[in-house]
Image 1 (cartoon, rainbow, N blue to C red):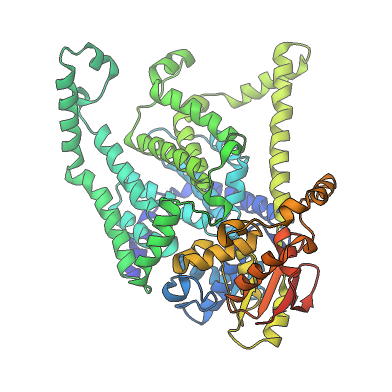
Image 2: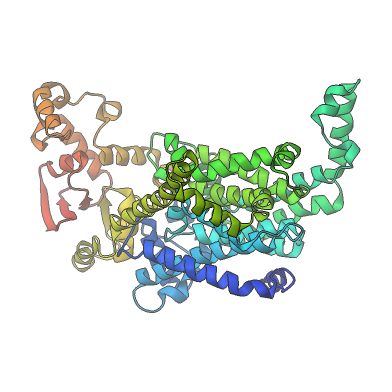
Length: 602
């Protein structure tokens, strides 16, 4: 089965779809992108702790698939674990098998990110034969994409984004070319690759809709002018709805979503984790990703809406998308104004338009979809705006630019100089910000000494209470000798035991004892003077001695309910950590700059 799928995908990469003269251009773009991403990821740290989980799982898979997960016994993963990044971890094995797995993960991340940028370059240059995009215009749109801080940051994470984007955009091209064999194979592999596999069938549905709408006869297509002038508007709408429905059920149109759904279904059933994967995907893909149910249990920041940060983060991408949408929906107006001839809109253009708008809405719901929105909006904008830019005489453009710069006193010269200064400044600031995030991330050796101490001084599989669920990937990478309370996503703990998940959240956050235990901590009322004095110094935390005896007892009972004699505490300056350390009966076992290990008496 796998061999057949690989043969189908190989036909997708035939010389007919990848003209040989583009190889050198694509190779140059790949090398330049690899250098850019390597520069950003050069720091010995990772901005996302999940990178440590992926590195360790890939290293464990050298011995065979990881079919169970005993390291989180209180979570749903203990009874229903699947590796929903199975193919990604297989792809990492050649990089992590030799030497330090974390170094290999960084190399793999740069390779995958550069591969996606090279694919995007090829799709701009060769994906639209009737209206090819010039090298200069393609390079311009890639630069606009790379100054999008959200996209550049996400694609260079040592996680799945670059690989999932690569396969997803291959699926877009396969659907656009009606290559059903490749679409089936890519839909199958996407299930094994990524927990967000429903995105591929969703794309196929959008392609089906776009193809069915554009394939209507000219006299059956929608027109606002014709609708306004029609004597029987209800009949006008009915005729076009009926024609559209007939177009939907045409065999060559309906085959696109059917093939994609068949591939996804095959990936679900012909799966080493079947049928456990069905329950897991209900939790991870449907409840967390699609429905995005936000409860009182805090989750990773990527699942929350972006808020007001969306506009500045995606500023350049939004600007070109708005302009491209105006040209797309008002081609006659802009064709006359610019004095150029715009190519006829195809159903592939409608596909990209609808996908860009769909992921725009999804990004407003959850910021993690920004990694899809940015390249989709850029590719659509390139296809729509490139004909105008392609007719630009670039040598003449540079001569006019230099002539304007020579007359700095004129308004035109000032405007030209402003943009020439501001654009590189924006690029520099964005790159500096991303590099700073990497530099201030999780160090490769962070918590390593404490985890080594645990592995040497505790029995195998003994339970350790980790006070921060997002520290689990680092603990797991450095120490598979012990088990932990919560990790990867707090809703896995919530799915298994709701009360235990709420207790854990209360301990982690250090507040809300009134909600759980029915009283108001006395220190909030009796130590207002102390709080005001500490706030003046920029410290809103409470001293350990401020925690009343009743709260200490409740906190101790909550900790003991987990049955873990060892506490691994990080973020030592957090108020919640200070509260735990202020409990009586704790014995310090190990301490360094980043963590402390305590023994809790039963």
